[in-house]
Image 1 (tube, rainbow, N blue to C red):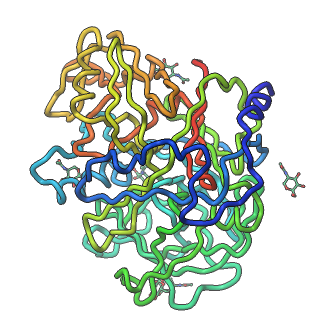
Image 2: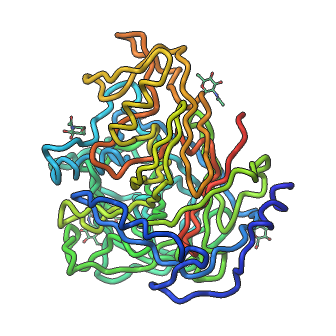
Length: 457
Ligand SMILES: *[C@@H]1O[C@H](CO)[C@@H](O)[C@H](O)[C@H]1NC(C)=O
Ligand SMILES: *[C@@H]1O[C@H](CO)[C@@H](O)[C@H](O)[C@H]1NC(C)=O
Ligand SMILES: *[C@@H]1O[C@H](CO)[C@@H](O)[C@H](O)[C@H]1NC(C)=O
Ligand SMILES: *[C@@H]1O[C@H](CO)[C@@H](O)[C@H](O)[C@H]1NC(C)=O
Ligand SMILES: *[C@@H]1O[C@H](CO)[C@@H](O)[C@H](O)[C@H]1NC(C)=O
Ligand SMILES: *[C@@H]1O[C@H](CO)[C@@H](O)[C@H](O)[C@H]1NC(C)=O
């Protein structure tokens, strides 16, 4: 429990709630406005997340749950690179865009947690890039991409599904979400108690999806949306209506968990190496985590990156985004300021081309970009350069283990892919290759992302 002590030393005035919207955490006044440092990225808008309280001490919490890692072969369509890439290509057709990585790693990794809805235990994918929580209901229609009916099994949802809302439907309101690659879900919304890690959020608005085109994993039945609270996909009207004027905003699960006084406005994520799983803590840091490196701590303001490329999905996705101070690799330092999405659903890191080229060249032997794969490859026993992401003045060194996907040798070339890829025109992504090295704290209340180093293991 030595980390609790070290956390106490980080304690700041916490009791004072500060007003919504214009709030800025104290101690930041001297910093230049990070938004002014970003050149606009077409297809995206950025806004600073509003703080509702002063940054304060993080508590250990017993309310945590284990996440299960799920590889979704061929169904990476919900990952941030695909979502962003689709809009980059529309917004900047002639500039760089996210490439599809077509190696064995084309599958995305998702993390699932157990959620109790109206007494039924379901496995939902944790998604920090969307804000709605839904499960498919037992009586649903599975369709193909064109909307033709298929057998239910074709959507590959998990087995156990809730069928009714505990407190009935919200009249005339439905969920409609379309994902980057055409996946679609729609269904009635209603109120149910939702229990996560022994915390029961009462009368939560959720959706029980009854129509979907979905590429499932036979395990999960829906999504737990932990995205930016204001961006939800509920609408008035017919099941497929989703114009912005029909939008029916509501408070998502985590917002209500905080509003009901059940937890502090913080959740934390510790991803295990090799996508096997991890821990998700509500209101603090899972109390079984020890060995946090208290000397390695950094934070950055949360800004929200919204995709604005398509008016129909203008508000559908949002991503928790930060601007790192820079990067260190080998003997070089780059202090250019770029927006980076923090995304556990993405395996590798996606950097600006100039950085990706330089870091890959610093491998021994150097990693080469292979056009056919859209990624960099080097020999599987290559030595990776020391590579750190600098956040809030602290350098977070990425374990060399996380610099190459050594267990996924390309059968054609015998080479292995590095975890340093290019993210077109941005925003860029810090994925699992980074998150495996830290405890990431989404301090929604004070609008900061905080990171604690985890020692190598
Ligand atoms: C990338 O993959 C998506 C989904 O499979 C596809 O729709 C898109 O056309 C591909 N883009 C490129 C540039 O290959
Ligand atoms: C199940 O769905 C079908 C088709 O959508 C519908 O005809 C049927 O009435 C539903 N059954 C129940 C019990 O809701
Ligand atoms: C899904 O639910 C909505 C709202 O309750 C209803 O209008 C629609 O017909 C249902 N769709 C199917 C396929 O059952
Ligand atoms: C779950 O919550 C109940 C009621 O607050 C409490 O009695 C119980 O000890 C908790 N269980 C765990 C495993 O924390
Ligand atoms: C899900 O199960 C079906 C039927 O058993 C199978 O055909 C399909 O490949 C499975 N999908 C995944 C992603 O495991
Ligand atoms: C991760 O995968 C590598 C390569 O397959 C393996 O050597 C290592 O033991 C795995 N680590 C964990 C924590 O499972």
